[in-house]
Each structure stands twice: as C-alpha cells, then as structure tokens.
Length: 150
Image 1: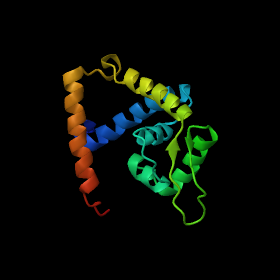
Image 2 (image 1 turned 60 degrees about the vertical axis):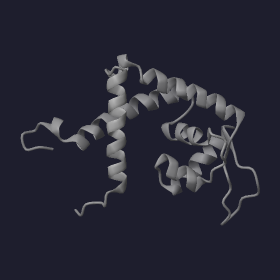
Image 3 (image 1 turned 90 degrees about the vertical axis):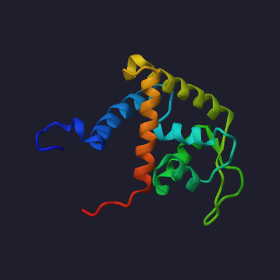
C-alpha cells in the first residue's frame, strides 16, 4: 500500500483484491453445479484425455501436492474421476476423467462463460483480451521470480 492510502497504483495488491472478488463469484457459481474451484481445475486439467498423477494435477492447478490426495478422493467419491490400477504406497496412480466428470466440467465451463460476460467484468472483448495478455505477463514473471527476503 502507498503512504497516501491510494492502493490503485500498487498493481499486485489490486490484483489480490480483485482475485478475492473473482474467487467468490466463481466459488458461488461452481457450488451451484456441485464443484469447487479446485475441483473444476482438476477436471479441466484432465479434459484433454491424458491420465495425470496427483502430483501432475497439483502442479497444473497450483496447489500443494498434499491437498490433492483429499481432493481427488472427493472427486472420485462423486464419480467424476477414477484411478485405474492398483495404486498403493510409493506408486503413482494416474487419475482419469469419467463421463460424469465430463458432464460436470461442461456445467463448470458454463459458469466460466457467464462470469466472462462484459456485464460481469465491465470489459469488452478487446479489453478482456488485453487484460488476459497482461495477466499472463505478470504470471510468468512471478513464476520465474526469486522470492524477496522479508
């Protein structure tokens, strides 16, 4: 934050504030179709047909690997994913999208489409495209940056 109290020029802080608002909108929309944001991320990561391990999925949706085991188990209990094969301690077991998972993913994408509407974002197609491009630049830079010391 700036000393003047005007946070508008502190880009990453503004991004964090906006992300909180967007997350609330997404979580409410996803909850209406029986998903969470992380659950949607897992289903979307599996949508191309590749079987991914829990570690692969954690990297894909930017969560800790420890939290992925419980999430995959919940999605499996709901019949949205399956883990073929024996699995077991020390064995990577791939996760696969089921037909029910594909149906739920379609419902999740409908939520994404509704939230992408200019009436929700306040952005027309050109501005939305430019913002997405700029966010990609920031994402890449943050991903590559060394954490600053406290």
